[in-house]
Length: 260
Image (cartoon, rainbow, N blue to C red; front, side, top):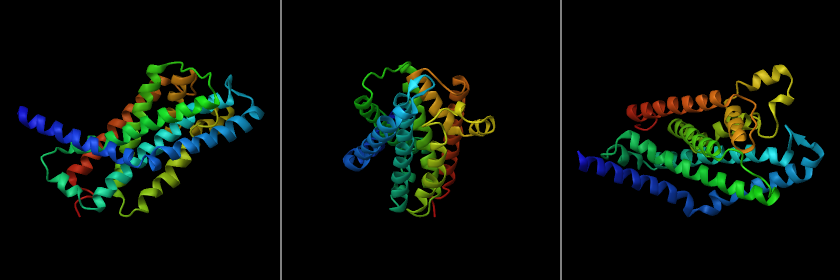
């Protein structure tokens, strides 16, 4: 029993290490572009347009933007990392080697998710460091909540990326969900504005957007303000993580989209 556990642990560490090294090896493609893109956001929306907007919920506009832009980067990078990685091994048929190995499906899932979480959290730290060049006096209001939401968000969207990769049947298919569903929901989830600015009807519609709870929870951790109830938002995030984990394990157990 002990040797079996050690074998699973070693396999998990090996797969997780491979996933982390995968995006670190091509850091110019995975880590630099988010930093450059967010620098442009801070420069254009924060430095140039921000002074014309003034304050948002009592904060300078560029300060208000920082949590939203960090979440934007974390979501897109953790999602895309798992999607591209798992679809690649599925396309190359190397996934079959994992499926017939002694590794349990939960360890396979955890190995791929760990790569997305590592990339998402690392990108979050990088974007925060970039933001300090544009707003040096920024202080995090609640570091514990900030780190918690950062990690949970990376886990959540890594799981979503895994589901996308399982059902994708081409490289073009893995870009459909981020382009037509994920990105619009992120931008409409309060990255650049507070939903308190919206008319009541649109504010109620925004409450249906799950991205709002992620962005608002993170903004609560960094600035101490939120458009939604934090316990409810965290409950939603944990609930989605639980549902998606169960769904991903079901897909692996049944071999849906994998064993063809």
